[in-house]
Length: 226
Image (cartoon, rainbow, N blue to C red; front, top):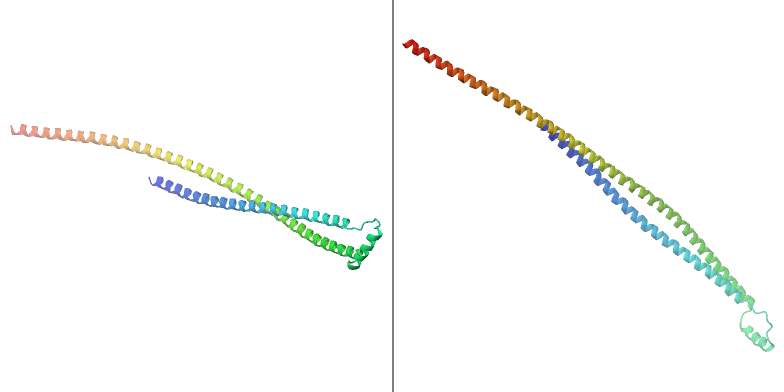
C-alpha cells in the first residue's frame, strides 16, 4: 500500500507541475493574442494614414493644375482694341498697375505656391516613406507574433499529449500493481486458510489422543482396583 501512495503522490506532483506549465503557456497565449490585436489596430491606422496622404497628394496636384489653368487664362488678348476702348483702357491704366507688373506678381505667387506645395509634397513623401517603413515593421512583428502563437499552441498540444500519455502509463502501472497485490493477498489468504485447516486438524488429533490417553489410564486404574 505504501508503494501505491508513493505512486499517487508522484502522479499528483507531475499533474501539478504540468498544470502550472499549461497555465503559464495559456497566459502567454492570451498575451500574444493581445499583441496581435494591437498590431492589427496599428496596421489599420497605418492604412488610413496612407489613404489620407494619397488624398492630399491628389488635391495638391489638382490645385497645381488649377493655378496653371488660371495663369493661362489671365494672359492678355492679342486682338487690337478700338480707339474708344483704347482711350478707356488708357484712362484705367492710369489708375491700375501695368500688365507686366501683374504678371510678375502672379509669377511670384505661383513660385511661392509651387515652393509651398513642393515642400508639402516632399514632407508628405517623407511621412509616407516613414509610414511604409513602420507598416513593414508592424507586419514583421505581426508575423513574428503569429509564429510565436502557433509555436506556443503546438507546445501546449504536445504537453497535453505527454500528460495524457504519462497519466495512462501511471494508471496502467497502478492497475498492474493492484492486480499483483490482489493476487498476493489471495495467495496469502489461501495459505492462511490451509495453515488454519492443518492446525485445526492437528488440534483435533491431539484432542483425540489426549481423550484416548485419559480413557486408557482410567481403565487401567479400574483393573488395578479389582
